[in-house]
Amino acid sequence: MNFNAIDLRLFIAIAQKSSITHGADTRHLSLAAASARVKALEDAAGVPLLIRKARGVALTPAGEAFLHHARAILRQTEALRAELNEYSRGLRGHVRVHANTTAFTDILPQVLPGFLKAHPRVNVELQERQNAEILTDVLDCSADLGIVSARVNAPGIKAMHFSTDRLVLVVPRSHRFARRKQMAFADTLDEDFVGMHPSSTLTEFLASMTAGTGKPMRIRVQLSNFDAVCRMIGTGVGIGIVPASSARRSLVDMPLVQVELKDAWRVRERFVISREGEPLPAFAQALVDALVAFHAPDAGKV
Image (cartoon, rainbow, N blue to C red; front, top):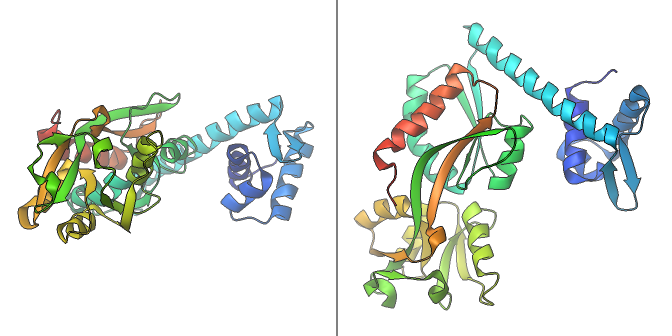
């Protein structure tokens, strides 16, 4: 068979979206170009890879086999590229990290300066993604490392725990909740909230926690990072839910009070993930080590 990485990534995208149209959009190809590539793959294979339906497509058994091998080929290609980078002294190492909101806005900005200074020939490419998307991105070789705040038990994924944090309620000092030591999230839902942007992992998680209560969060303003959220809370606009690590920094110079949540889900376990059975390049492993070392003093704290 004759195919290239574009064909493989396109087929994987089509399989994920169950749609040639949406798969083509993901890979920035026209529908006509994507359809032609799929037809060429099927002609070369001598067997249909997709079942065309009125709404979308499904994989044939041959398509399932092709998908499995396409992922394996891309993994091997990425492993080869990473290994060659290590041997090429004149080339910079390149680590692609897909991280959830907390890691993207709060953890990595603290870890990366020291890492990049210690590894001047390594570049880091960051993308903010949802937890479920991060798993897929790592499996499909779109990312070398992922950072998630949920336990991971997925085939093909290696997960390393590196920190434990908890979500807390932050309120202005003048707020009626400021005297409370602890309360349930459900008891806060009559208040106005300051939140993270709509696509953040935390925003989607909190929305899922209110889904069965009949009381959606009354979010007045949404911001791009936890520092901005805390500053806005300090003005009296509303209350908010943030990681305790972010709240600690803000309490130093902002008129805020931290109130503990009773809910079991407040505890957030953080994991760095990679592809199982594939040793990381030395520079990528160094970044994992930097994450673990940075949070070692806080290990186990909740």
